[in-house]
Length: 478
Image 1 (tube, rainbow, N blue to C red):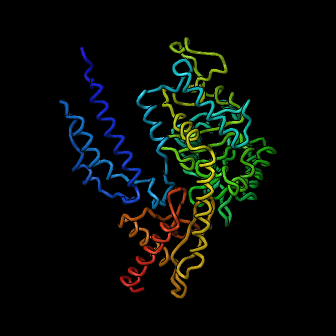
Image 2: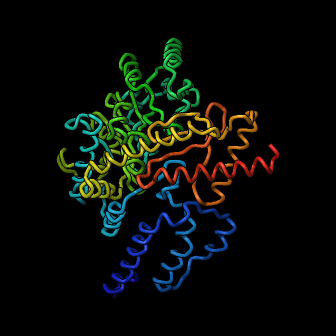
Image 3: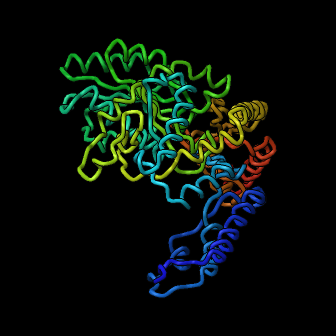
C-alpha cells in the first residue's frame, strides 16, 4: 500500500523546481516590489477562510494559490527600503540550507540521532565564542528560535546558579530601554513585579549607573538579594550600548550574574567601530546574539552563549527512561540538555553553510557598510533645514524628526506631524518607515542593516517624507 502522501520522483522534482524558481525570482526581483503589504482581517478572511478539505487538490493549484495570495500579502523584510523594526536581510545560501534541513527533517536534539547536526552546532557555536572572546574550552551555548528564547534560557540559568530553588527575595535590574522580551521572560519564570527594577536611562539612553547603584544598595539594606543585571548591547530603539565594563565591575563587586542582550547589536563585533563600542561584552556570564538579525540569517535562529557550558546542562538536563539508551559521553553533546526544547530543528546548518560559502570577511564588510551608511545618513540629515536628529547614528540605527527651521511648531504639533508622515509613507507602500517614542517625542526611526540598501534608497525615502510634510502643512494649514 502506498503512503497517502506519496508523490512520484518526477512529481517531486517538478514541484520542487517550481518552488526554487519562485524563491530565485523573489531574490532577483525583490527591489522592484513594494516592501509593505496592508490588509484587514476581513480582507484576509475573504481569501483564506474555509473548512479543512476532506479531499485532495492538485499540488500545483495549491502552490499557485499560495504564490498569488500568501506571498504578496506579507511584508518583504529583506527589501532595501524596509527600514523599520529590525529588518531581516537573510541570504540565499542560508535559505537553501534551511530547505535541506527541513527536507531531510533532521532532528537536532540528541547526538545519536544526528551526530553531524550536533557537531555543526558545536563548531558554529565555537566560532561565535571566539568572536566574543568567550572561553571555547569551557564555554558553550545553544541555538534557539530567537533572542526572546535565548534571553529566557539565560535568565532561567542565572536564577538557578545564583538563587537555587528559593528566589522569593531576589531582585533583577534592567534599563528602561531593555528589550521587552526580557520583561516577558522575567514574568514567565515567576518573578513578581516588585522584584524587577527598571532603571531610568541617561540622555544617551544608557543605563544610569548612579541610579543603579542606589537601587542595589537600597535593596540590600531592605534584606533583598540582588542577583542579576541585564545590559543591552544595541537597544532596539536607538542601537545604544550600555557601559558594559562599568556594569561588569558592579556585577563582580556585588556577585551578580551579568547577562548581556546583544540580540540586535552583538554582530557589530565583526566591525572595527562596532568592536570598540562593544568593549566589555566578553565579561558577560551569558550573552544573547541573534543570527537572524545582523548575521543575515533567515528566521528562526537565535543564540545564547555562556562562560561555562555546565551551567546550561546542570539547569536543563533531565534523564527520562525513554532517553536512557542515547546518552553518550560528555563530548557528544545532546543539545536538548542545554535548553528548553527537546525536539529541535537543525538551525546550525544555515549559519554554517553561509559562513563557509561567503567567508567571514563578507559579513565583516556588510556590517561595516551598514554602520557607515547610517553615519552618512546622519550627515545628510544634519545638513538639512528640515530634519532634527534625536538619537544619532549608533550601530546602524538613527532616530530623527521633521522639524523645519522657521516653523516654530509646538511639541504636540511635531508629534502629530511626524506620525502622519510615517503613516503616509507606509500607506504608499514604497517604504516601511515607522515611529518610536524617545524623550516623550514621536520620532522616525531608521534601521539600516540591509547590505542591499544604498544611500539612494535613503535619500528617496527622505524626499518622500518631505513631500508628504508639505501636503500635511497645506491640509492642516500649519
